[in-house]
Image (cartoon, rainbow, N blue to C red):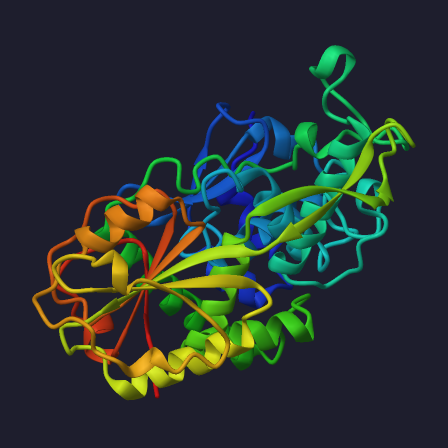
Length: 401
């Protein structure tokens, strides 16, 4: 008889009131189409955990509970809803999210999991954020490329590092992330899922508090979870996160780092990551001076992470008005245009010039634009965030001055 998750969940999470309450809001589906387990938002806007019964049959109860908690952490920290990997970043971002979660589940998961401080990631400290692990993984990937790992003979095939661990190119985590963003969920269903998640987390927090125990949830995780349901979204943190995940890897030769594959023959490479961000500003009068001032003040703090190109627009973009923003820029309050609003204009300009990320400051009152070739985020006021003219699954954040 194959393993039935619904029959075992209560037993596995007997001493985990937070996860037990959360589990009741998650549909569970048995399938042999994947080797292990995973979570996703399904087409109806409900959270679903899918699992291979043969995989769970071979685990101990402790490992089964660990896998359940691992998958539920992905939900709690929005890895399959709002914090989706950008195009080309999926591999490293998936490993980074697992490293962040597994910091709290070090002895509870199957050996094929990725753990900070162990194996390939033995030099990674524990309890960093997904973003911090992502940066460490980018550096590791650069080192592997410099050594020719992951290329094999003649530049192709599987590779491994000096300790026999697989290269990042060939590294696989134990759970399945393939459903994250691969088949975009209808925006209405996704919005409902996000609301359901917040309510589910609130109920789980309430139940854990009533029982006087959060089980194995660490104090740091508890704080992060409470912040997620009690605090307003900090648009400054969201902006910083957006820029960090937009950073491009720009390689240049340098004699300061030895090429480990061909020492003293070829120069080494040092990676500089500076995101090239487009900032399109709606000139229709909908963006207040206070909002602009708050936004630009935050850019001052992020100058080391990115270069910012300001694109004033109304129903078109006038290229002679576009400028490269510099720290302390004084032109921030000028109104250089004053027509209607058409989001196609700045989007087509950004698509043409190949930026790493696109931020649009607006009141959201115009039709939905064409698709963006880079990740795009909308920054607006409270009214624009709560009642946009069009539906989107892109991030929409209110700037509170």
